Image (cartoon, rainbow, N blue to C red; front, top):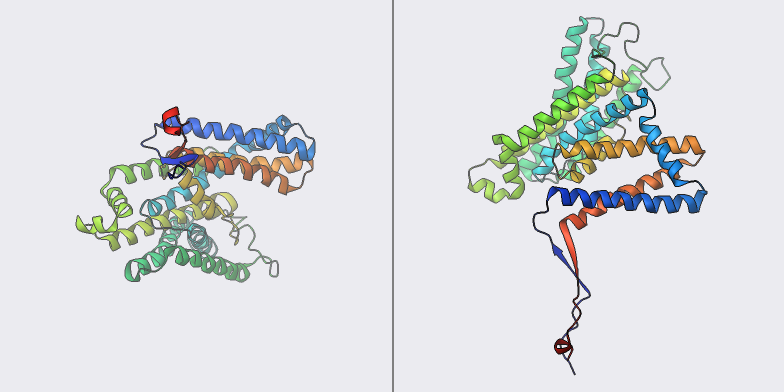
Length: 367
């Protein structure tokens, strides 16, 4: 009787360095497979032609010039927030407070528009908005970083709680500044004078896009070619190693989170000053949390985040069009989006690992 244990049917082995084109080929295969599964499900549940549904998704995001501009603008905002949280993630500081940091920046911008709109010239108000939004976002990043550096508190819990504080602050000032009274909302700020409205470059969408492009380039350079970027990577790899080579870990944590919060504050400024011209508790639209997925899918690479932001926004806008065009419950479009994202996220496993199946035993080995 053979006492040896039977070899498992398969082994999961970590891959070495995967070439970029192999990784993207796996991702493309995952998207194709997701579309096939979604098509089968669509036909089975609704009887619709899946090709018509996919065409509608594309139309919803890029069907007209205006839809295309709005889609690219939405990509820009999500990209900026994703860039903001990336330095912290590279440092293994799990910043899930992007939502609150955006709200803090948005509230600061709205406060300048409301309180200074009749007291200062437009240019001065805009300068105050820029400075206050960046400082407010930076402050929202500084608080959890300080407690982490000083007393090693849990940064995930702390940044999450800061979201609730920012939300309630916006809710408080919404009631304080509501127009008209009793409406429960602020309304369009300085609608008659346009004081505090950020200038248009070409059209009202282009400013956000330009800032997103510049931010992406600067963040890429900062993370990959600056001393600060190097220190972030070393701290992320090992705090002990960082201390051994003379890096002040606590200083890096605080500095990096102030940067993350400041860039989120910039996104809040754009949401208030360029896009919505008002502030609400939902102005960030959950993008502070979506940015976590965007950053992770891109492997914390600022250039890769352009594609992942495009995918997320494209699916979101297209899903809304499905509900309208086919009179379907919005939950169905969310199901399709979820399936596609499941495959896209799941394929990262096959980029990092490979599955080896048990080799068939030879005649000698079987005896």
